[in-house]
Image (cartoon, rainbow, N blue to C red; front, side, top):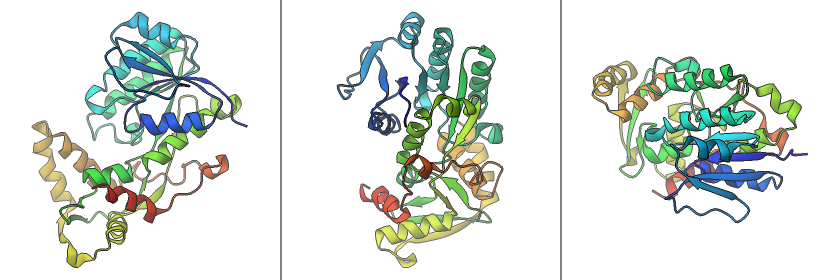
Length: 301
């Protein structure tokens, strides 16, 4: 049986926040508080408690978070530093569990490979050293559906262009936004004795284990196309990485992600964690269908 908790969410109106809120509400046992900026116009279901104020107002954040069992921080990449304000307030308010903005790669595994990873590890350390709160890092790796739409797998679906990474044929763990949300809801609905086992640890979620070529195959199936319909090129993975380096130094954030994607398909540590992924079917979460996921991903493009 799901255990009800008081859960505050920062970023409940975003790409991951919306499905996470929906998944938590579907459990029917949690009391959810959405923390919003004073000027926000995002609307939530009537059962959601909404607290509005300034994110730089420490007293507002501490008072809002006092009495909460869990804080979920889901902030967009340009505003990652906001997570620090929420985390510090949650520690001050004595919130037992904090889910910082992880929802991606296993930060300690790639701490030197992306500028976001060092600060993520620092946030974990801040929480752990507080003595009052514990972190749980939800590890989902790269989102299959969202990154098909963005083009970071190497595929421009609308333009029918594909760049295959030569020498990078490893299979990686990948999830969907929906599966990540369902995983968060399953995690936070565990009985306390089970949830406590994840204090200051990672909770690994995986939808599929795929190579870049397998993703391309699924996209072709979903679009009813063949190689003949695409402008397909191959480029050596090490060359792509080398070309990304000066772009990254110039502040190109897209290049930083491209570099990491290619390195994952080279099989770098942390790219595949199927041996650690939680079997969500034990919590009533059915397996996903790759064809359906990819079809939905390309349908809106």
